[in-house]
Image (cartoon, rainbow, N blue to C red; front, top):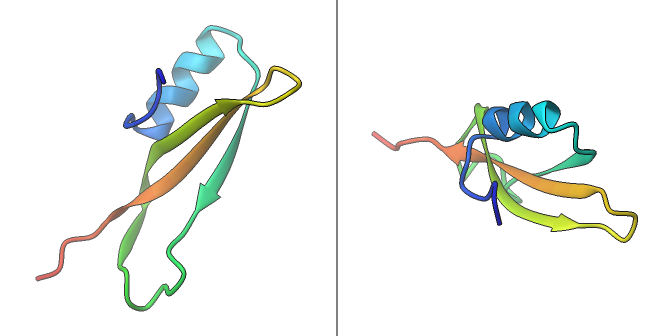
Length: 67
């Protein structure tokens, strides 16, 4: 698990420099009104290799602070 916990942008830059094939999927909270997220800051929360050898990254937005 090389990319879990990293910013998505950092992971994408690294994968592109290594010329690895990858896909990105996104996950969001079920109720957008209750859980406040910052859609501009995405983190890799899961990675796995698909049957065809492509790396799949699951990205989630950072939670915003409640004030």
